[in-house]
Length: 90
Image (cartoon, rainbow, N blue to C red; front, top):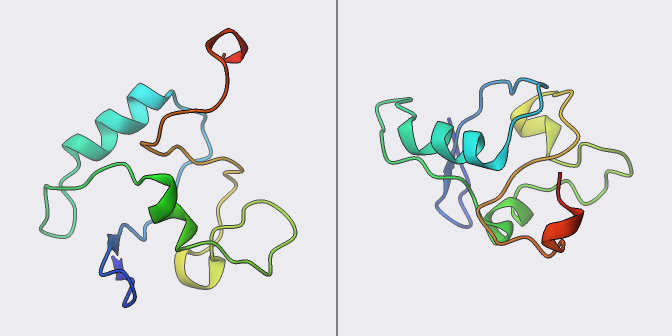
């Protein structure tokens, strides 16, 4: 894990799979995860995710690779409600 010293949030640092999963599957994964001696993990909200963005990155993924390593994932789920109209969702 890695702890953000500014927010106090602890993040899972292990590599992510690049297989696309549904929001419900991502939520269930976080809610049932037992990792690094913790069982109280949750899907981060947009504010949480904004704290780990590499603002200098011009290509996806913009998650700070110096901290979290490389990942083929180009999109990340959050627990924040979507702004995309329901009819436009897959």
